[in-house]
Image (cartoon, rainbow, N blue to C red; front, side):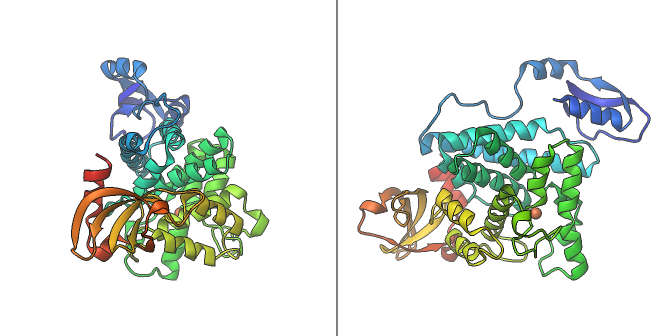
Length: 375
Ligand SMILES: [Fe+2]
């Protein structure tokens, strides 16, 4: 049904935005919060009862090319950020959050990964200024969907891990903004408040009636094998396999992003950093499997070739991890963009010299991506 406003209640709950209610859990939550009657918009209601949830319809295809999948992946990436924003807004307004939408979204995300993982993986490299939290949650979901699929986990496990990844940082909305966005280091008190986002997240997810085994995954995303993680300082076997997986993926995405307190680090270097902290902090075997799932030079990352040109990785070769398929698009020598050309480094005289970041060459990567990749 499509709720227009609250007409009768024995509490002070306010609905700031009109919207569609899609599950009985959500209705029970409204009743629990003292709502007695609601005003329903019938015109929207008819639409809502015949229309699917506002996420992209599933494609009947089982596989698709990178070029065919990238527009769908791009749309999904945007939708993921919008849904994330809606959920955070609802939480900060004290409203219950309906699980139906993130569930439907992550189902579509897993389908896209199944059709062609490279398209959504590529989208994880598109970063917009000041959108870190939204992008991070979508990216962790994408990377987990890809990781779990790579490990041939069951359909249900892939879905559940992906959903947990998408919801893992909701608790951050309860952390004061000046701490969340502080450019310098946090003092002890601020650090405690920042770490509390895990507790807040657990409470939010309990209110959303997320099953306990999925809340456990979220609860463990900052735990480390040596016991120096948080919130519980769990160690070794106390941390589940899924908790170890989300810890790797969460750290990887955070290291490769620009943050208010540090600049982004290239993907390949980020993987080395994680490796160096295993097995003390991260599960070494799982890190090796994670690297295999995204490649030594992950799709969407930039590399400098021995031809003095910059290219974007568009496909990994499982048997030749150092020689992926790339799209060459910039000349370092002439400092000019080039018409993009696909080069299979496995069959080329050129090799990768190093992983690079767009800012090192003052490249407008997002513009290039929108004009030549996400057509
Ligand atoms: Fe977190």
